[in-house]
Length: 257
Ligand SMILES: [Zn+2]
Ligand SMILES: [Zn+2]
Ligand SMILES: [Zn+2]
Image (cartoon, rainbow, N blue to C red; front, side):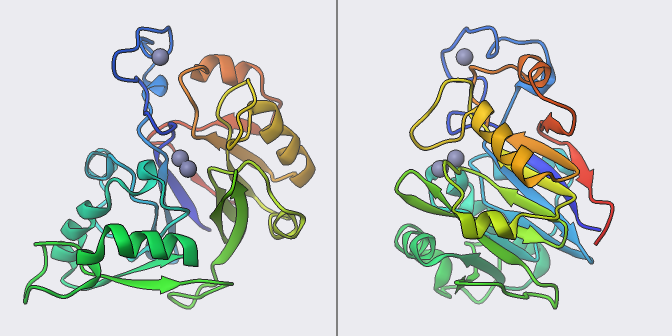
């Protein structure tokens, strides 16, 4: 029964946006405050961190996250990698190297930007992240439980979603190729990105996300990566039953395996 906690549910600027006085950025509804999109999946005693968002430290403190068994990266855009250095605190707590899984494009970008995290410089943990990078090209089983990568398109950039049993997490998609749609059938919970009502060249709009969910028919879907053009209440009011807007700190659990 995988369980997922939303650490952040906002688009790359976060909400509120610096210097913006729009109704969503000044909303009194706490669900309208969104850190950059990231989540933690807990499954069979292991904690899988999905991306290292800019606010990783604050997200970990807010949700009590104190252990990360593996990091699964979706892609290397700055909003999903900005907290990478905060991983060093988990090395310090756990006294061990931590595995990071990423597709080849993302792994290449991580190696370039965070070379120091993949080199052992110190005889102790905590001074910097100590990570072992694994390039993935298909299903993998870090701790005996199969994780299925779901390749999607984010404009020209490849992005990887992940499926754990009957739960799947897909962010920053604009297009889900037919082969990947097949990997997302029979789900209890699907997490999918929806930016705003207006179309965007590299992100699904609300209507595009709803159409995909209505085709896939998970028991329950949650939308993430919202912009300040959509308040939690306004987005929720437009959604059919079985599709909800996620918010930072929300924990959801699947019914099956
Ligand atoms: Zn993003
Ligand atoms: Zn705003
Ligand atoms: Zn992105």
